[in-house]
Image (cartoon, rainbow, N blue to C red):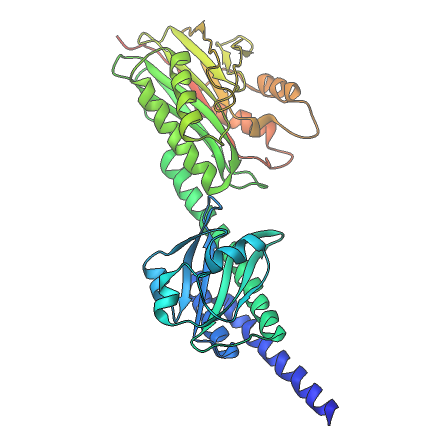
Length: 407
């Protein structure tokens, strides 16, 4: 008899597990999946409420993301500090928490107003990292069993996997859209200059923080920029957009590229305290005869004239943006002869684990001859991205002085 009871219990446990791991759930979008998981969890645990709160990007607060029986939490955008209240305690401990009698441990008034008497919560994990909390509640006092805790853990694991996978896809799509909006295939046309650019996401990191820019200024000067924000994904793309916009704003105030990068570094230090980025900013004079360059830790630009070998502009790279407060910044001026070319690039083009950085720059230098901007971009990509795709994202910008120069 006891064997039959044990077998029946095992079969019931298996049925419950299968209910929350139904393959059909994988076809749902994130919101529908979380809502369906919560509905099934309420039914299986005979609970009156269920909710999922995800950790915000700062890691300091939990945000109500999905709920069943507590829909007000999502509608009102409830936020619970980690370490405070019931859900905050689950996140801080990283382990299940059971509350048989709701009391002052609960700081969310919606739970109190709903009349929730007992709560069971488990952390949502991505490896060892807590990314959220799943909790269920009942309107009558109840002691949850070990099986209840195990089932809720399973649901939390499934919700964690689905959340991370779908958010990753959404982040990538948003980052790609942002990159495309900020980095058009062909930069703005400027009289007297032939300009072309390329951007390729890395195979290992996807879309990152590489960017380029070229724009005419009211003074008649022309700004040319390229940079690389450390990291990848949506956050790197968003930070890249802010840095790119800030550089344009500072470029309106001064034609000194070192001054522009000094102001930009101050902005990064204050408003992006955990960001590191390299950038190179160059200013072409209105007659297109000279170019003034300043580098914040970026790779040296290459310059060439028709019939002459390509060579780097010997600009001393100062510290990257965000590295150290009040770092001095320098500039160098070089001639831009009629028909000469300028080539800017990020490290994804030349850097490989199998060779030193200097060797990559030398390969690039030998591959470039002054010609049309499109031809230079194509030659660089062909020389360095033929054997294998770049693991990091790549941005390049080619500029050639055409004839005649503007009056």
